[in-house]
Amino acid sequence: KQEVTQIPAALSVPEGENLVLNCSFTDSAIYNLQWFRQDPGKGLTSLLLIQSSQREQTSGRLNASLDKSSGRSTLYIAASQPGDSATYLCAVIKAAGNKLTFGGGTRVLVKP
Amino acid sequence: GAGVSQSPSNKVTEKGKDVELRCDPISGHTALYWYRQRLGQGLEFLIYFQGNSAPDKSGLPSDRFSAERTGESVSTLTIQRTQQEDSAVYLCASRGQGSLYGYTFGSGTRLTVV
Image (tube, rainbow over all chains, first blue to last red; front, side, top):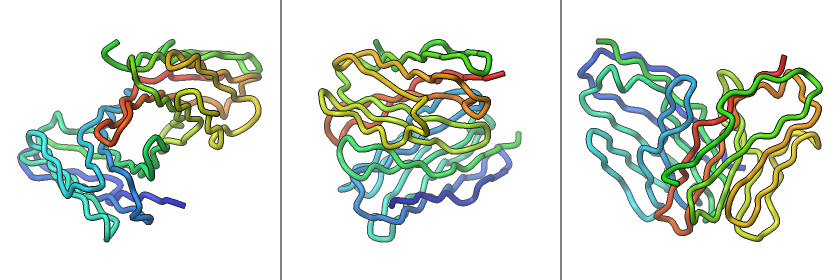
């Protein structure tokens, strides 16, 4: 059974610092991995999708890496801003069309 | 539409009543998923529809929960005889075919059972 773990569970940084969020999964046979952002009381916003054949994806200040063999993904957010405060979730999918398995999330607070 | 639409956005119901939650996926997305998120907790998978295949109901917590989907369009999640433990945000997601397509989530329905 796939298990996804996110460490740390919570993170507080001053504005301008880079953020590093970790995600690990137990079964390396994944189809792809997706990072989401969730604001309080809101749904999920997709940030980055990494296919199993890829090693990283970038979008603006966000960069996500994937190391399937070690079962890890890392989300980097450069030059953090107070607006980056949210919960960040990673999720893996085992096969095409299969369900997402989510980590517990990392709650981020960026202090002005 | 441009995104996944869920209605209602909020629902307060009395214990024992039935509720119906609706999800309109992105047009053309063949896969549709329902998840539940209790306060302060992670996302729990409930049910998954893929085209005309039999749905994967493995996440439904009890027989009070059921869901339907008409073709590749609207889905409804029904909870019968609601209990206070059913209070949660119910999230719907849809996905296109192929590895290039990630999941797109709706804003959710916040269900409160009083």
